[in-house]
Length: 381
Image 1 (cartoon, rainbow, N blue to C red):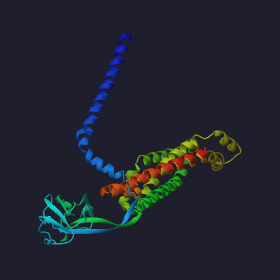
Image 2: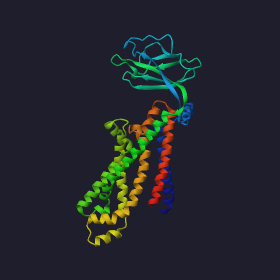
Image 3: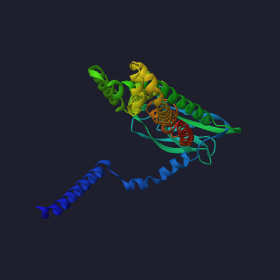
């Protein structure tokens, strides 16, 4: 039997290797990596990254000129509008169409070499960005455009195709984008702060109930201990993104309150677990000494447990505030408000330079808070 042991070990290694190879092959098939598409998309990636790396801080005082043209979709939904013969205008050929049709879009008498935001103004008043384009040396635009099904007329009201032209005209000023980013960043910081505060208040009593050395005494205490532990584990299994999505649908998409509720719930569960472990790791000497004096359960906790756990509780709370600031920037993408919501709006409307400003603000604030929380936690040790 002994002579077969090396063979069996080699066979085991071979089987493990084969299983890993099969799993990797399955992973490749499921994820469908496409290196050719990655390489062919390089010009697009270069354009997007180039704009992201040019954040907007300052701008010139400017005026915005909007030129719009009604587009009946389908053609018999509303009367076909007449096109102007002079001035800044949009001309469509044909002037109407059905979803999936391609029409030719032309712009005339626009500023030369100007940046134009091309978008649909939908029948319900919503905006759908198409792309950012640039006029030629004659102030004209000529391009094909596919009609989207979402632009179909509703109750006799047609969609419009719109050019928004920004004309620099004056001195250098702080960009509105920078002001919006700073305001949204403050919302994110305070959103994380209030969520951490609420979560900590809820977590403190739960942590004592989930600490075996405090609660797990007798049948009732054991039941309470396991119920609270199970509750914390269940809540911790939900990602903040999922909760933020749910609460955004309840209290309003883009509302910071949705993010506060989501972060408060996850913070309470996470800190409750961390606090309970801190309580369980305390020195039992002071507990035994105070118990020997005839102190009741509340007095033992107040005078033997609390003094030992305060530094850990403060350290965990500050650390979690730092975590919540980072999470807040993500949950904004699902409607949780703050800088993440602003960032998602700028990306969805193809305003990558403005998105770059938001990304830079997130990096700076996260770095600063990480350094600050680290220094505070060091002083508590």
